[in-house]
Image (cartoon, rainbow, N blue to C red; front, side, top):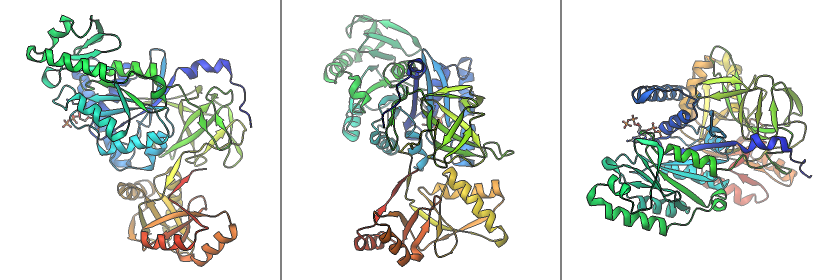
Length: 529
Ligand code: G4P
């Protein structure tokens, strides 16, 4: 099928959108940087550094306490702010260390990412993992090397580490003028200008690396060596190549200090200038371009009970094309039914507001009572399904039990809701034994138990299951699949969509069955449909 003709009127607001996430290892400075980005966008108003510091800590602790309770970011799921000519949608990747599906799903909804690296630590485990997810989708990455105001590693060493461990070309756009206690600012190779640490808003033009204004910023004994190194950095690096960046092969690198609000301006300017506007999104039947006239979108996150007094559920939808208007009707492709989008919401730092209209690249919250699920596609009528919101085979399987048998039905309902929200995966064994829950990270065990107790009043226990792993099973030959399911009854369960999974006590036994049943596909990842 051919794509409908792009609508010229829509092109402008869409070209202004930049939808991105920050990827980093805990403590590298993501929260601090987020806050500074929001400051630039005027999304939060802070007067003076002291207040900034106090608010900074409060904001952080607020977020963390909610995250602790919920195991997921709440307020920070998405934040919209304007800066210059652009509208930025910053999507938060979950703050806890456990690597969860939430992270994958969030990254399926962005067009670019900022990678924050602690200058003293370099590439850390979580950054690397998140980077790999970005690479799967060729997401362009802008790098921010943070904490230059502290003693850190040599900039060349850091660039080298990015190149070697991530197989990603680097182009330093700025270069730090000294570091640690004597960190004085950055020099920009492209514009031959200097930003001083405490005057980030001024761009001081210089004649080049020999300019006396630069020498004056450096400790006397460092100046010659610094100049040599900066020259080497400029001449030795690959020139910035927009196409290579957009394809995810090259990252422009900026140096700064989020805490000192330094380097953030260059970073956000780079996002405006280099990061792509909303990209086309692959659906099952065709590529959907952002500037097509009709609205399409997919749900990548569900947040239930945001307000504990009202059982509200917010589905976060990334708009892939067209314009969403408040009150419009949209088709939920999974069920074929039409629903009215009466109260779409935008999120700004801590506030939300009703969105009268939103464009491709935007993320809106859609309040609903269980109608929408993760992976759902909404359109103006076309039958297409966006791909790439995956579910991964859990690494932990537990049987969940409740003391009070009278509450078994309520438990099943609660688990279904939480599974729809993506907190847990739910497997109902064919042999009629109790539900099995699956998760990717151990933290989810606590999150699930806490939420069952606090939101549903259910006190539950986990029992180890004899199964330790599971795989979705399918086959081109329906009869083969049916016979496999029948002959392995006690090891088969249905997931929340009714799709069959095969559960095994060990990798060894899984391999044993896989080798003997070559017509069955055992898959450890499932695309939400
Ligand atoms: P995260 O969200 O990536 O986990 O990091 P976050 O912003 O919370 O920052 C982690 C710590 O690093 C914070 O320290 C923060 O103030 C500090 N930090 C962030 N950016 C910079 C920077 O540019 N320079 C310096 N020197 N520090 C920075 P903290 O929690 O207040 O205290 P502590 O962790 O040092 O005890």
